[in-house]
Image 1: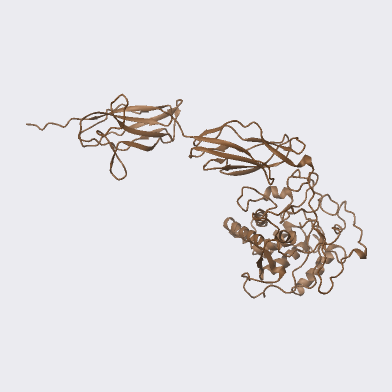
Image 2: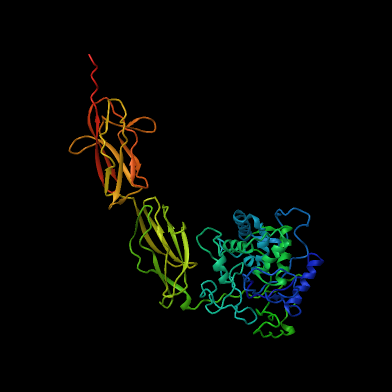
Length: 554
């Protein structure tokens, strides 16, 4: 959940009910005036909310508890189309808003029965990260710096030991919630998505994170147009009644209208000086109460006409050199060559090393196929992201050649790092045959100006095995020492019915068999030759006999 930041509850509420929510949230926090709610703070408070399905996506870490302002952006009875302008609180940064709407459309295309509203994603994004810190994202939707929750070491928060070796959160001892939608690494490993189509699943990218949140909320057979299912979905994100009420308040607020603001200009709830966290839920095993801050530490109300001072945003911890990818290198990959339609026998293998030169385990590496090719990794993917093993190496899935011949490249990069890529060249060659022969010995004859009655049928093989899909060229040739295309005798017809004596768009079938189109004789009698040549150089020459014209009986 929203990381490391204390939050103030706003004065006022949208309605009397919202005012009640504010009181409930304050009560649940465990101390008068508390501003940050932990997920475990009141999960048993009422006993009326539905049980969540499985473990909370965010590890029940803290979140922004600010409620919507008194003045809603629109009236409940009006349409929910976005206004051009509105209050600062109703503004959502452009990239963030686009990501929520895209996630809604994507989920609707694969799970229409869930009826995911983008406003629910906006509400969760608001309480989790203040809409990615007011929309501080680059052109691809990735935050300029990671958004990290507090260390989940059991001291005031849940105890979740490291599940990703610090790959996402920079902590190899305990987990931390990550990104604008604050997923814990173990949940991201299951639900992470590639929402912007760049071949990566990055929890710090709003498009990836929003789609992952949408799919997570739609888990099972939930229909989010049903209040009970929506409550279950939100509670599965953070099992807290106060959290549910806060998200519900923002959900209703955004449904009444919002508007787009430039990235980086969104409203972020103010930080509470000192970066302290509230006490954990009383009675939580292993939890010790935090001391009550002295009165002087409480934030002072703003002066008329002034602004509330805020503390600088905390800087995410820098991973130690032993846990930072510094280099990606080839780990002994051989020549990458395959025949069209076949799998590459060689597999790409890389090694990652840290800043100290040692092998780095559980480092994220992304393999991407580039170039004019229809080759894919096993499963039809063009890009895959994998973690290195204990020895710092990782092997890409099997490469599958398509029908397009030629060269293409595969790049291996440290995911999310600006490091040089390891580039491999792969080559797809045409299917070949080392032998081709007729399947029968029938004489091929025709009267002048007539069709040859029998069809020419040949079979291609390679090292004795069937050669399927092999390209074959058929040419009527002269009988010279160095034969060329004949300009008389038997011929084929093209699609327009014109005479041709060379065919190039021929290919053997799955059994290695090729049946030639009809062959026609002209008026010149004699013995002619038809040459068939395969990709790979195998050749067979077949005789065609055009009979002399019959002499009329006297």
